[in-house]
Structure formats: C-alpha cells, structure tokens
Image (tube, rainbow, N blue to C red):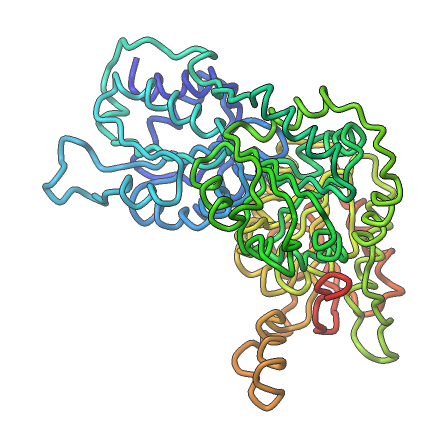
Length: 535
C-alpha cells in the first residue's frame, strides 16, 4: 500500500468519517485513498474554512475534526483558525500537503518549513520522512489532539512520502485513543472538603466543558457539590453578555475551584476586584504551564494545583459529591445575577431595527425547532446575540476573539447533524470573511439559516472610536449597504431582506421552509453591545 493508504487507514482507526478540504497537487493521493476507505471529503472554498469546519465538527461530535489543505500558500491560509481551535480546546488534525522530501533544499515547488511555522499554534507538528512513519506519526498526532486539554495538531505530508510503498503496520484504536489523566483521590477529597467548608463556592469550567459539550454535567456537578457552576468560553470574560452580572458572583465567592479554566485576561488575572482578596483557590488542570500561571497569579490563595484532566475531575466530583449543604440561597442569588440582562430599548419609529428585536424573532424560531443549533460569531452583533439568544446546543467564536468562522461552523453542523435546525447570527463585517461558503452549503444541501445584522459598519471598532475619540474622529469603519441576500441567491441559496421587525417572523419562516441555505438580512441600528449587566 502507499503511504497515503496507511494514513487514511489510521484515520479510519480513529473513526474519522469526514475530512474538510480544499484540494491541491500534493494531497491528491490522499483524496484517492479516501475512496476505498469510505471517508467523505467536503470540499470548501478557502483553506481557513476547512479548519473552521473541522473545529466545529469536533465540538459537536466529540471526535477529532480533520482538515486537509495543500502546501505553502494553502497551508498559510489555514493557520488563523488553529489559534481559535487551541483557545476553544477543540481537537483538530490539520493535514497539509508538502514538497517532496527528495527535493529538500533544492528549491522545490512550494517548499516551506511548515512544521516550524505550525509548532507555536499547535500541540504537535510533524513531517513524516518515510511512508513507514506515516501511520505512527498520524496516530501520535491524533492521540495528542485529544489528550489533556484538547487542541490542534499538524502533519506535513510530503508528496513522495504519500506515494511510497509501505508494509508498516496499521495503527489500531488503542494507538489513537487519548491518554487519560485521572485526578487523585486526595485531590478530589481536597476539593470536596474545601467546598463543604465554604459559604459561597463557585466552580469555573473552560470551553471544553461549556454547557453544550458537558451534556448536562454542569447541572449534575452543581447539585453534587451544592455550588454555583459557571462555564466561561467568551473572550469578553467577566463582561460576557451571556453571563449577565457574573462579575458580582465571582467577587462575592469565598472559594473558587477551576476545572480546566485558565486564570487569564478573561478572569481579570485572578486579582481584585475580579476575585476577592481573601478567596481560596483550587485548580485541576492538565497543563503544567497553566498550573504554574495560577500559582503566580494567586500566590498564597492557591490551596491546590493538581495535574489531571478537567473532564475526569468533573466526573469524579459528581460521583463523590453528596450535596445537601443548604446553599440554595447562594445558588439562587448567583443564578439571578447571571440571568440579569440590560434592558434593550425598542427601535424608534422610522429607524432601523434594534438588534434585540431581531434576536427576539430568532429566539421564537429556535423555540419552535426540535433540535436547534445556535451559532454566534463575535463583534457587536454577536454580543447582542449572546446576551439575548439561547439553545440547547450553542457554538460561539471562543476565547480567541476572532470573527468570521460562523458560516463554516454552520456547514459543519449540518454535516454532523443533518436534521438539526442550524441558525447563525452575525454582523455584516463578519459575513464578508467566508461568504463564498454559501456555495459550499448549497452544493452539499446544508440548509442552515444565516441572519446578518446589517448596520453597514465594523461596529465594534466604530464604537471604540466614538467612545475614545469622539464622533468627529470616526475613521474607515463604515461598510456599504450591500445586498447580501442577493449575493447568496446568486449562489443558489434563499435570500431575504428585512427592514421592519413586523416582517421578521415571516421572513424567517420562509427561510426555514425553503429547504436551502438561507441568508436573512436584517437592517439594524448600529448600537453598542451589552457588556453584561452591571458593567
């Protein structure tokens, strides 16, 4: 068999059933090998889109998401989403074509040291030098992607290596499985004892254990420990609009336990006023540098720094916790603070719609769906959506703060769950990044509903200019009154253009019933996003 066949058989051992890809010369042997292996290739319009799709697919399925792109310029175009994947804790395998090993140092076509470039953005990057190495290297990459804090890994696939013959053994399921790091009995007991002695305990979790991915585990943990449990995955941290006045909750906590949540800019670096000066802090995390950072930030307040999988710790605490500490009043107070929202004014007569009014119509659509998946990008429009919208399954742009991936996420969501009602809310700035993926969606029948809040500006930056420099010094943050609905229709999709809130429900209904990818443009007022109640 060829090296490409060994690689694909290794992917099959990891239960990979789909690869998101943009083709190129060097990876054609892998395309060929996927035919016999029965691995589906979803062919996209931009290399970055392939990586975004792999990231969302991983988040929704629990599998390793795989993206495959070509060498050098193609590889470079796929790098940005790796940072997002690392921050959002999604296991992604990026396969990139590469120039032949036999031409190294000779100025080969698209010769580039991809491993050196990818290494700072990934947990592991490698370039197998022979076909015999491909299976073991791929298995190691897949294992590392899932172990500890999940994240992206990378393999550079030299063209001659993919075409070499090999008789190397094919890795099996055990070779690609994550390595477990269970918490010690003493660490679990230390957390339970600390919680038992606290009056206002809070448990923090990171993106890996958000409400969607924890699958009910957060509520079970809250009851098992009779504590407040808060998942944090937004780049706005304590000003996350979906967490209301979370800052007041953390400031009042006498004990904070982190299960895989970084102590970084999103938590005010663990200092006052974000955390109380006398708060006791315990942390279970799979990465040494994260534990060390917590030690530097918390000093003597750090009572436990234990290296273990956060997911395993959550499961162990649920099993060991007994509840019954009678902290109902504290949990009720915290829930009310997190549910608090800044009251949004209605749109003025004759003015564009308020973003909250658009969100209200979207929420009605979500509430009527059997299996809704909500996807929200960043920017001011995205923050209104995070404040106002909810669904059982949600994907946001993650702690990296990057924007532009939501259309890609939606395609992957429909690949992962074809029967789901997938709804996106994004701004018109965000829409421009990967708008061509409407063509991909149409080609694969990914009938999501994308709502674009159209205020004709990069509103997040525009609001900064207004706030910091004044209305006379706003500069180059304006956009055109582009008809995105007509552009989507040009790709064969359904388009709607809405200027009145009274027309939104009907437009969304037509979009949902069209059976096509849909682009619903809602003309909105460019107002500042909520920054969380109390901020």
